[in-house]
Amino acid sequence: MAGKVSQGFLDAQAEFVQRVSGDWALVTAGTEQDGWNTMTIGWGEAGMLWSLPTVTVYVHPWRYTHQFLLDNDYFTVQLFDNEHKHDLGVLGSKSGRDGDKVALTSLTPKAIEHGMTFEEATTTLVCRKIYTHAIDLDAMAPDIRERLGAFYAEEGHTFFVGELVDVL
Image (cartoon, rainbow, N blue to C red):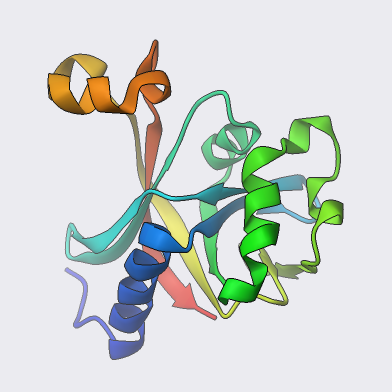
């Protein structure tokens, strides 16, 4: 079993929940050497699973970043000050499949152990992927599925649970 979780990890988890709930965040997967992609997220969770500090992100299968998350053992989550809200808007509305969307922002990519981050991120959560699963639409409460409409018309998001292994 894992030991006691550091206060730094707990603080980073709390900041993640606060940011993702209103200010957005980025999830990034891949490496500088093998290719990578990033996208804006507005849904996520942080907590404890299997006695490990975790961060969970949700990505729809048609998003370009989805395959990078499937193919890599690690992912990172970046948190930003509000001055980068426009950049996060761009990264959530453009696809890396169509070109270098990061070039349309003021963000500076930076290679780190286990992946990528951005110089401008106030916090980067480095996560080791420990569980992946597609949301079962039949198990979803009907009122939630109806409220989310187009997000779940035919297939649900995949959730990626990562053990929080470092905070930068």
